[in-house]
Length: 113
Image (cartoon, rainbow, N blue to C red; front, side):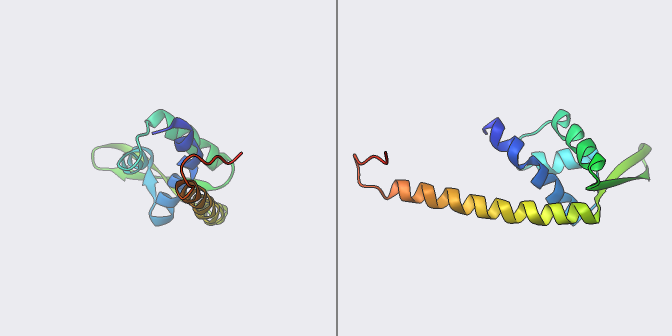
């Protein structure tokens, strides 16, 4: 998949996942990578930025298999950002899909120029 596509939508994917449940970092990577190929090195800086911007908060929770895990959850600001990005995403995808459908409906040999 195009790297630029992934970069453009990763914030929305993280916020969408965290709108459903609090997660620790590796869990976020695993959940999203089930749909989009991503790496830990991509997600952790994004989590740090979203936290610094006030969209996420963290807390520690004991783990049965090792040290406590840092969980991420949305703040009110994060919920508002998620709603805005989600709305923008569906609008954008709709516009791109209309454009692509129009392109497919063009008679052969015609150019938009």
